[in-house]
Amino acid sequence: MIMRDFERVEILLNCLLEAEEVFSNKDEINEVRDFISHGEYGIALDLIVATAVEDKRPVPKEWLPIIRELTQAMELESDKYLDRISNLVSK
Image (tube, rainbow, N blue to C red):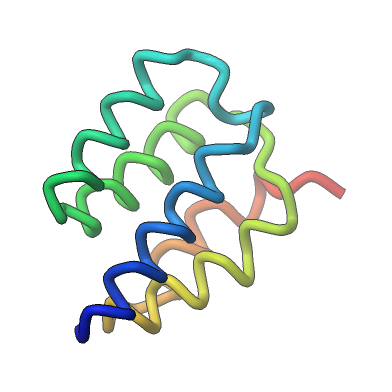
């Protein structure tokens, strides 16, 4: 990734953290932000998705294009993430 990709990835990851229906616990948010600040974007995304899935938290539909863009920028397989949250997406 080039520098502007890193910046875009950080912005997108932080957008996911703004979903109050998923993240109301400041400790969870701080843990993810710590990974982001250290450039561990893949771990941050894994943790975001795992938190939603494990606790069966509703996920806003706005997450779908964000995750698609994130995985594209990070050269990851988007279906791996989207499939995991598809049944949690709020209508």
